[in-house]
Length: 444
Image (tube, rainbow, N blue to C red; front, side, top):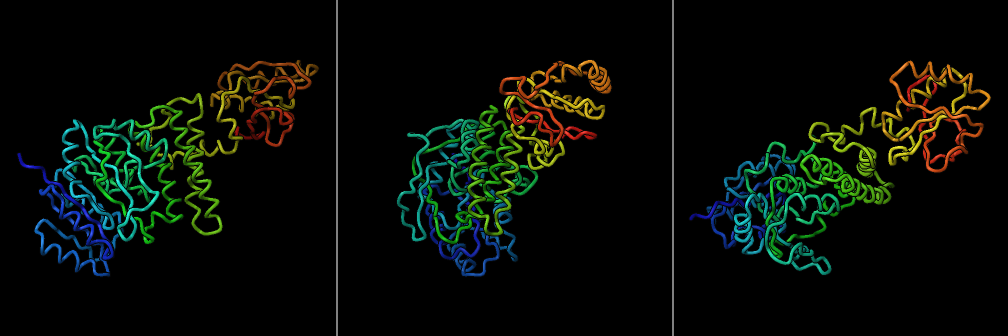
């Protein structure tokens, strides 16, 4: 039986420092039925001469030369489109493969029914090709074999850790990816985590094959953008978007997992803002804080599961909808718990009573309180009833308990939700949270 063709794809731009080593590792693979497709993104160093000489020596090599520099994304995509193999193996121009890399990964994916992805443990080397001390990647398993795709993808997202590795680490089925949306998990191009986006799309289709043997070596050197803080800020923004995208693919099935994932991103982004705030590059980290905060509000305990389909409306769109922005006008504590009771204490003015009842309707619709109540002074109870009844008749019916009290702030034991006009202090900060509204306007 003929071994299936494997396309080893090498994207490069000004890669003369390490390209020869990458090419050598591709050409020396013990698995011989490979094509090597090199995408030269208009290099201005000796890269064109290096790849031309290699192609002249090895008929398995094809070179796709871009006349103008289109950027890393377009280069990665163009050589994937040109791939003829049943399986694809990316090899970044500064990384290297172990001699049996392709053979072991092909055998592994063939032995794993339903798998679209195979990967291995990898090691870290420096710019001279020497192992980097103290940077050993842990093995995910003691023995080679399958890993459940949904469980692995969920772990990646919940911890915001790419345990699978960089593009050079894996081999995958060519027909398992949609090239047109390769870098767009949510309608926008990803900034940094191109590999994670691909892994999630593949893991959603079935299990992955994994071997603890080191089959690729990832080179770390000063010229890489991935080690720069400003790129880290963009990577954290990618994590927020990929978590949302992953939920749409079936990862993170439990709300608690989703909250933990977004909380992890929030933690990282907060530290990133602090490290970048004196320069011009902290904007992406701020957006990460906003998006992850919006997601955590959306995923508040007790909220209806799957309130939004990320495939239809991604988080970066949902978070800017008026109803989402209105959440930020409230104390965020309002959206993170279910209060046993929401209590209002309006002045006996028709406009304020009407606005109060409308705010209580909004509280009921948001499902943030189990009961609704209005407190009025005992001496004013007779005057308050017709005003409240009139306001209740003007909109959808809600159940509201009328409570006589001259000290509404001291009426209830903690925790309770105060429903009060903006700027009002009748609750004297004794409430666990405050739902504010404008008299003469809608609830905030």
